[in-house]
Image (cartoon, rainbow, N blue to C red; front, side, top):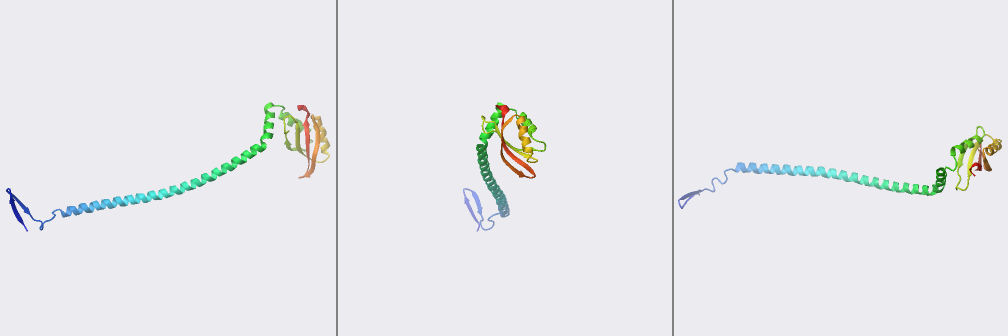
Length: 191
């Protein structure tokens, strides 16, 4: 169906049935190429998002583990703080008293222990020493391990020679092949 139309001296040939699209191959390649580029872009985005989602899941799990550890550490810190505060309250008065004695340098601990060592009989040793509970009192409570009961008299005599007074024996017992004596004494040199 070819028709020629003359209008204003122009000759137009219209042939719609014979060659509808001359560059059909070019359009196909463009369409296929654009489709491949689009598929590759979508595949890249999907893979990138899957990888990001996996990393996000790992980060979320790590964050959850860290939050749990942080909570356990916070509770442990609170528990330890309570224990420290309880210990601080319990030992505040004796520690403050000993510190005040040391700060005031009311007496020399070195001289005190030298005198205590000079008062102990040979082979005996000091097991425990409790300093005075108040600044007005100079009464020390101590526990000594002796070789035998006969050394107790020698210990009392030696302590009196070292200027300790008001020596009282509170408790005696025999443990670990040693005769142990608990006693209270005053340091007469401090008065």
